Amino acid sequence: MLKLKNLFVSLFIISVILNSNISFAQWPEYILDHHDTYNILAINQFKFNIWNNGTFWSPDFVFDNIYQGDLLWPGGPIAYQWLNQQDAFLIFGKKDSRVYFNGDLSQFGWLRPGRVLDNGNPDDFLRERYRVHRIRQNWETTPYGPERDQLEQDYNEWPVEDGAPWVDRDKDGVFTRGVDQPEYLGDEVTFYVSNDVNFPDSGIFNHPLGLEYQVTSWAFNRAGILGDAVFIKIKMINKQSSTFDSLYLSAVSGYETVNLLQNIRAAGCDTVSKMGYCYFLQNQDNYQYGDNPPAFGYLLLEGPLITAGSSDSAYYENQWKNGFLNRTMDSFYGFFNNDENAPRIEDTIYATQPSTAYSFDLGAQYRNIVQGIYAGGYIPQ
Image (cartoon, rainbow, N blue to C red; front, side, top):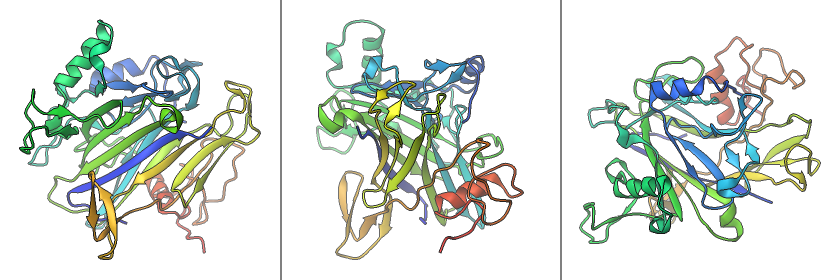
């Protein structure tokens, strides 16, 4: 449990270790209405789609009129096999005895583009500056064309004023274009800033917290494990006058446990390394990968700060801070979504899986899960 007055930072890595659906006809109208944009990290073996509405999914990968993949691997720019259907985040906070929660398990998104102004109100989400920016090492060598033009524009307009990382070359503490430079955390980097202030309440998850979210993602064009990894850093800033007395952030993976041809998959976690992972139980995928299909995982590298002893230290905002520790993974949970054969328990505190069939709020069920207890509220002994 964390208190949030101003700042909360977490760093995740998605790595290869060796259902909420919408039709194709729906998404273009939605994007036009809400000004959502996306960009792609594809500098290594991953092809990873990043949207400024808080979700990750591919609008170009459709099967049976349904979006199927956000994590495509291997092949980078030409990858066509999907590891995962969709990634997103859920966030829960409590203030003044009221629980707020937000996030999304669909492609509709849960954030609106733009920063939060100093007065606590959101900026105009229609401003073009709030697109997903992308920079790449040695972009000048990219062949002339639309991609090079966009890389050059994103480099020249890198939104440092909105929180994008940068290098202070003249050491004066002030970003000066033409002197200081964007920071290449990897060989390719994306950045966007969005918020959930006054975001329309869509029911299950959208009870907005009123925060600003600065999301930076990067990847390396390297051999070995870095060639099979994507990094995501989320910085949440509370510019409202009130303080959250607890906060939970959960990474959500829309991972098919049984795919279209009944290839059984499983999920688990390693509490020592702070990683959740997914794999094929039978080491066989008749749908895409064939023999020896890949597994993949989500690793928490840099959790938010918690107060600790004077001899402790935590890594935070590119430096070590004495007297703190980084929060580690609190819980892991896997469940069947809309599966008639999945085990269910009646509408009691022993309910293990979120369901709209239960009498209590679905958002509250998910909040219980991210705290490491049953959806119904039972605390395992």
